[in-house]
Image 1 (spheres, rainbow, N blue to C red):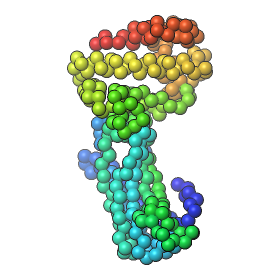
Image 2: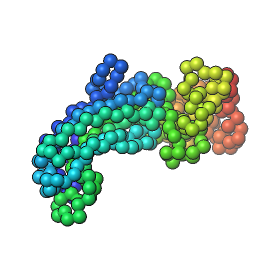
Image 3: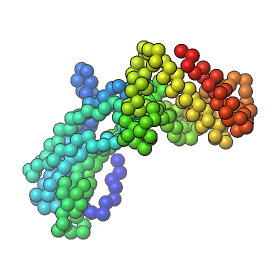
Image 4: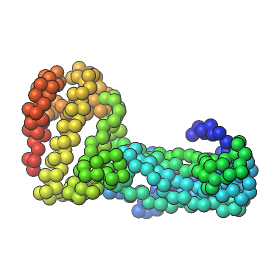
Length: 297
């Protein structure tokens, strides 16, 4: 990982000895993998890591006094849920060597997509008498690294996450939101994410019971899938380069959308479907309802 150019002195990389993140599983610990294809939002992640810092050298090379307080911080970011937060902060002692044992749990409902784990050695307090070339602000980064974990990147199921919409830019009372990102050539599993609002108990419960849904759960799931199909079809039709003649890569968003449109509107050209939507949007919406067989549970 390349180092950022900072406007103050920082120590050399070797003042920090950081072990790789470890994932706690039922029978012990394993090195953090690159991906967890079978992960789902009901699975929390328990993570551990040991980091050792030569504090004497870190302070000296940064131009800091011997008693400058430092802290090691771990922060997580989930691209699928658009959430992030501090995982754990460990103050460093005044001794020559500091050891931080990170050990924390991340809620599966908060995750999804690519999980970024950032670890940083920070100046803990502002220094009012610091020289311009030395760290002075609380939170100044002296060292950092990042490890990533892809969640559901290769999973066969529709990628999803259950989150609290009040902590996002989505309306608090919305039940779900289908997020589509990237171009038509992007990988489907990295472009689609269904976000379910945990505050909407009926929807969250329906997905928790998706393997054995009750009558109400089936109705909710039918509504969600119908709405997701509508959003995906409309997204496809809004792209000028979305045609049946385009050679989309296997596993791409374009290929997935083309397959969906062909299943819902067999024997119809994309040009005709696009024109029908433009000329009779209300009737087109009804066509989509019929095509997805909404509420036929």
